[in-house]
Length: 598
Ligand code: NAP
Picture 1 (cartoon, rainbow, N blue to C red):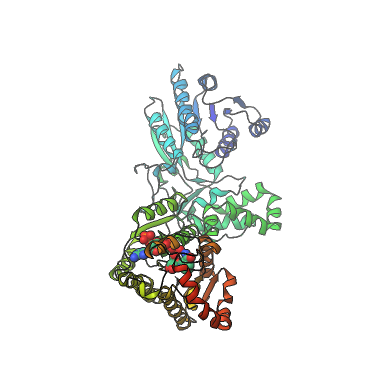
Picture 2: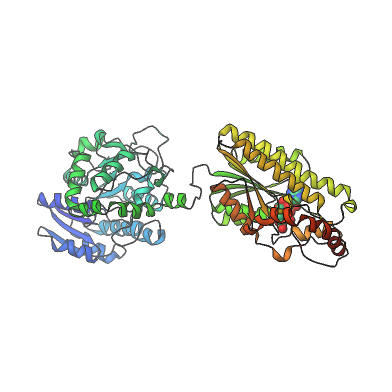
């Protein structure tokens, strides 16, 4: 018979070509004139011949189809990186031109012939989409639900083939692995617990040759798989192949978790008609090792390097390295109060970049929304929670809503707080009360609420933003400093309580931080400014120290570190500050100066 074989130099094409030629068929190999294909064509001997061409050019296709009895159409742009260096998902329109446009050209050319050839169209089990939630096996009658461009193109082509008026047979292939196995990132696309049916490429070649000669396959959709002995889970298939190549098993965290379009197939009919299931995975491993040859020993020699390189190809592994959330897997959760302000915002952004799903708490809904949009634009996960923490009940709301949003929190950062500056007796009582509510009561309530849940789960971290003034009597900020003393003593005491558990509580003691804190305090303090803004560090610096505390928990940390001298200054020079304090405050309170610390 005269057979046109498109994609003759691809993986399945070579197997089909070898079997058809072995049986004495005249095979016309249609493929692109690439250097790799030209090398393969040089090995062709009659009765095989080559017809270089492009499926997108109707004239090429028509010339190739002329005089043939059967057309086996394998050529397709696949999701894996092909010999042409392109894959269907990266350039779907271009791939469609070749996949769907090419098949249309082929059908048109065949129908135009006086004696139209029969058509065997190679399709794929990808047409079923994700089916791991359905009981196996897939049958030819199952509905198609393609999830990638490649599979959509296959479905479109299958429809054209059925409607072509030609004698047709559609073969949907299971996992046909190439003998010249190349390790690439595609290997990580399939979750390890997915069902997969392996079929030896030489058996597929056999099935195609048998279909060409059969009188019983026309008008049928047949599934080609290796049969029950080759129905495995991807974990096993992958483990066997990597072991055979000398790479060794790779960590489960490198593989996708989202189900892939693989499954076990009902091959009863295809096997009855085509008698092709002659090889097992053991045969494949043996044949593949022969083809890979000396490179296998090279891989074994460079094993650590190869494993490192391979893992770098895995999107999940890279994500884990950057500690970004893995799609489909719950992220670690951080609740950050004061996220509409400077330190809280910088912390929320930092933790989101490190892979936390962040619950951003504050009062200003617009600012929180902008923060959430920024996190999401960067590929992270965040949600806004606008509440007023001067109302004690808001703390319970934060706990409940945060848990409902993302599940139990792994991290709580209490950053909400505000300051006031002036002689203590001039501080309006409502402001003082509000300060006690936000800086003290809310911090205590939230800490205790989340701590109970963290202890129950056996893990978690709480970071309370205190201040350097928490350990330094501060003229002009008596109540504020006292609130921070509370935060400090409360947190460091809990740290001691929790020693030896997997839950940690730490306090950050910043000096002045470049933030709106000073403007807000000035607004509340009749224009008097808390001194210190001039020496301020950036809020990102505080966020960095907070992130550092999560990795290496400590009782407290000063920001900047130099401020750890403050207790010594107080101890040795406290008597002097006692004398200068009222003088300085009196001068500043009258508006005479613009600097000091938060
Ligand atoms: P900021 O920019 O003024 O931010 C303060 C944050 O607290 C804002 O998100 C604000 O929310 C929130 N907040 C205030 N009252 C609230 C309430 N009733 N309910 C809910 N949220 C409330 O100040 P910051 O510099 O980021 O300060 C953060 C923390 O660092 C504070 O605890 C502060 O004491 C401490 N600290 C600051 C400095 C400094 O120099 N900046 C130095 C040492 C310690 P809204 O904007 O939505 O009202």
